[in-house]
Length: 465
Image 1 (cartoon, helix red, strand yellow):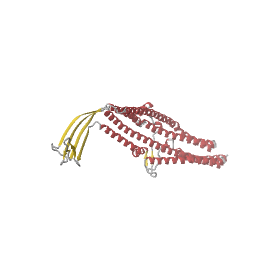
Image 2 (cartoon, rainbow, N blue to C red):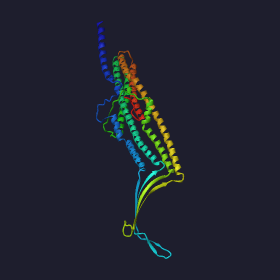
Image 3 (tube, rainbow, N blue to C red):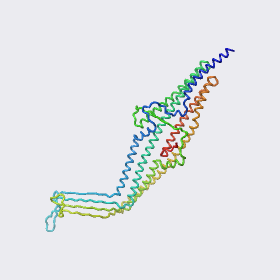
């Protein structure tokens, strides 16, 4: 009887020592929950940059942004161009001629020749004119110029929003790859720990060599996803270097801090539609283009009415054989005049009617484009809103599953050690944990990607903190 209790004591000691070793290794694995997978734990600060800093650098260095800035400046100058019609026009013209051989005229019937003109002839005219009326074309052109200026600014905002969305999407891909590295690394570590468990069983005669071989295959199959995740992470950083105009060999480490995905809130869908209608740059540009097309119809119609302008001018004429610019009353004269000019086109081969028709068709096109963009934006907003809600639900559904799956794996491993569970049970629990982590990681990534898409769709950040 004493020997029996001694055997039991030895078994308990061996079991406790094995359990403590497993608990220590399991503690290292279970120290991370799902949220910890998205913590930026890279201690290398060489070339460290945050997502916000990456966006700022891209906005300052991107070629599309610079082009949009130039377009905005062009539109600003168009405003000045249209305003030039309001201001008076002042011109100065003059001419000087030197007679190489004096012209002569014949006087009939007596005959004989009489010299015409002088050796030096000078003419100078100064005139100021002001357009008074052109059928509303001037005011329409000024309004169109203002719309062009606003359109240039909105196009710049649209380019900026596109860059923000692209950089955020790229950075989220890098963050996802980093989380997948941890998930695949843990899956590989679990597979190696299970191989140790099977080896212990094999030494006790409770497992076959086929079980060991099968587990080694699982370890080999767990390595390629880890390699792929690491490569995706490095490729993401390489793409980010290109976007930020950095050398491929330049150190770059992305730092991030994500909020709790479940706590992200947004305004109701109807309010999001209204925000997008007022802030989406490309929709604002489409509306401005419609207004510009409408003003261009008015400008084209003004050609039917002609124009009225006021003028005042002063002239000088001088002629002399010896003086280049004579000023005496004998060989020079001065004059001044003021008045109104009226110009009415009577017939131009139907040119004005054709131009008006073209502008009307252009207006119809602009209106259809505006309606199409508005409809597509509503679809984008609703799609991003639906994707965000769906991703948040997946986060809520999978967040607690990881801890449950890990606890289930630990207990099943203990049962396997005591002969109360099979190797298939052990594999199933490891697979459940792996799938739970993959689903949670993807759900968190999709949540923040949907937030970025929603912000772009409405034209501004709309998440409620």
